[in-house]
Picture 1: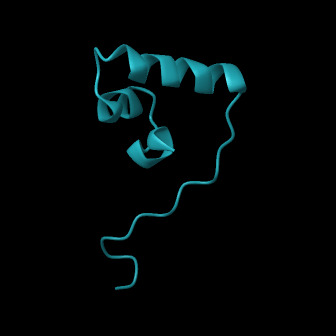
Picture 2: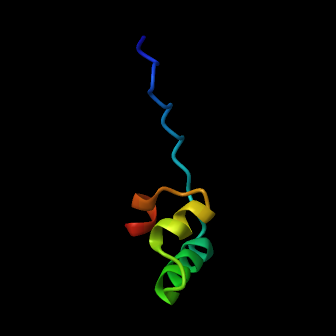
Length: 50
């Protein structure tokens, strides 16, 4: 019953500075929402907003 409806937390990932810069640029460009950029790169929206 404990595992019902609960997801396992993802292991913490690290990203190269170049990847982070690309994500920031995509968000600033404005043609996609932050949520959509996060989804496209399999990231959480919270991780992108930080």
